[in-house]
Length: 192
Image (cartoon, rainbow, N blue to C red; front, side, top):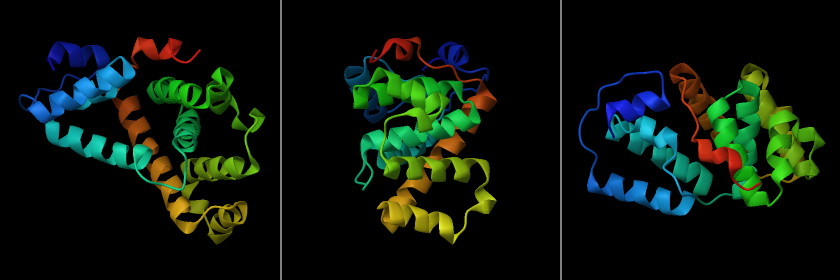
C-alpha cells in the first residue's frame, strides 16, 4: 500500500512500517474477490500490519464468528451505532451490508435514519435500543437494561456480543472521524 493511496483514503500521512506479508496480501485478494473491492478501512490500516491484523482479527471474530446474533443483526448494530456517531464511512459501508444481507434496500436507510420505522422484531428493537444507549449514555447502563434484553429473548452471551459489536464500532467510528476516512464509492450502489 503506497502512502499516496493512504492519503486518498484518509487525511493522515502516516509512513508505512514495511511491506505487507503474503498472508495479508492473500487476505486482501479474498476481500476483493468476495466484495469486489478492498475496503478503504483495510487500506488505511495497512500502514502497520500489526495494527491491521489486530483490527481485522477482532472485526472478523465479532462480525463473522459464532454468535447468537445473526450477521444481519450484527450489521444492524454497526449501522445504528454509526448513525448515533454520524460516521460517514461506517454508515456507507455497513448500510450496504444491511441492504445486501436483508435483501431489503430500504432497511439500510431505516437503520441510518430511524430504526424504529423499520419492520423488524421487538427483539431487534430491544437490541438496537441497548446499542444506542450504550453509545450515547454508557454510564447509565444498569441491570434493568440487561434484563430487558433477557426478557426479549437474548442470552447473557448475546448481550456480551451486542456490547462488543457496539464497542467495536464506537472505536472504529472515532478512528474514521479523526482520520476523515472515506468509504469506497462502490458501496453507494451496492444492494440497491
